[in-house]
Length: 382
Image: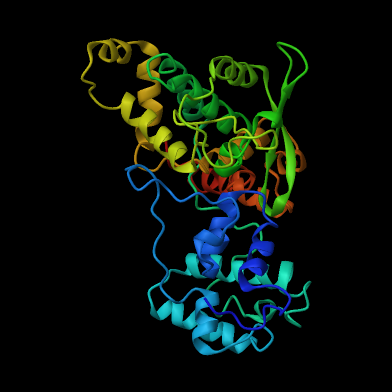
């Protein structure tokens, strides 16, 4: 990769790695690298996936339309780029079949690259993305727009916790998986925040007290979330049984300074977000299908399993970890928690993001339709 005007004092690789280190999460770094066109082997902390593993997300090969690749192909330096160039790039993405959501995400990555690095380093004099007419590009999303992510009902959240509890002792990693589900549902943390926590991020003053978990959020912003006693108990049950793997040490997992992840696989690797998605899907399918083993069939015949199947069945094909954040926000506000506190819990920079998670529940409940429709039908409709 040849990138012009990255500064003569440092190579392009060094510059791009400096930018990516702004973000604490390796998954966030990978997301920005993918959208900008930075080679994945340049991403600090990235470990290539084992080619022999069948599970795991396979990242798409670069198309040449990523921002850095596109600029290089067109001979642009960062200081030369103007808003018309960015709009031309967006038009080419549209012609190549990129969705509006993907184009918007890639545009945000370019904006962050300029605002958080190039301008501060003196490698550009303006952020051309700030002048893009997002409405004309069909990328405009008004503040407070409800999120399209489906939320889980309160009963579905209970069913998910119950499913993880019922299967905790029936699989090799069941206790670990239950702890992950407890934290996901009980705190509303992001999937990458959950898998990114380390052993020294957790503390609890005394048994039966709340636990405190430090999570590493977007933009390198850490925050502490409260683990209610049942959630902390589930985590400590896993930690009590968590043993160091006998497999040889892996890169980044040895030495006194190495961060030790809380949630690990049997080989000692940090659990990936794809595992969390697979776990939620498995919990749904286990309770809504016919199992082969008699032991599992006996379990599914219990009233608890029937409750789980009733409420997880509709989620089987759409369940996603991010729905836990929407569910947390909605159910918390329904129970009287101030939206500002929910905003702090979820690590949102602005309240409008949290309000978007609430799906306009209050507006629906307070709608004039509750008064108008009965009045219109009164006297002639039984």
